Length: 142
Ligand code: DQA
Image (tube, rainbow, N blue to C red):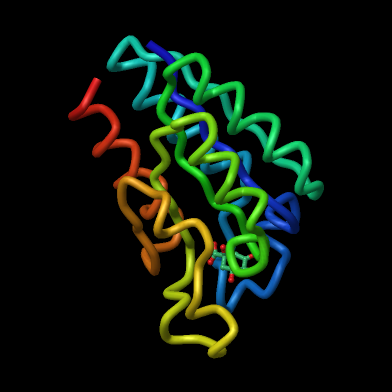
């Protein structure tokens, strides 16, 4: 089986970007850790990042059509994107929404998510561990 981990805008800058909020681990560091765990479980990992909303829409559609679970950090598109909500619903994708930071402890514009109502579950606030916890949830269900 296959797990898709999809990352949205500005997450390519992870490690250098506001380290006080997002930490010093890079997206490659996170990918390496997830890869290790997936390999141990005999699961293949598809790990992608894009700054473009449409890429994420296409990737969610593809994963949904393939019946593959998705771990999604949509970055700021979380708070703006009806298109991502529609993609999840439309492709019947099983999505776990993740955030490095605790969005509920931050600016009020981060408190609302268009992803959450379409998500299987939400994990926020644990830094890179948010991804690993989501992966454990996925592995339980495979
Ligand atoms: C984020 C939280 C979002 O509000 C923000 O726009 C991001 C990252 C997180 O992982 O904490 O880009 O999704």
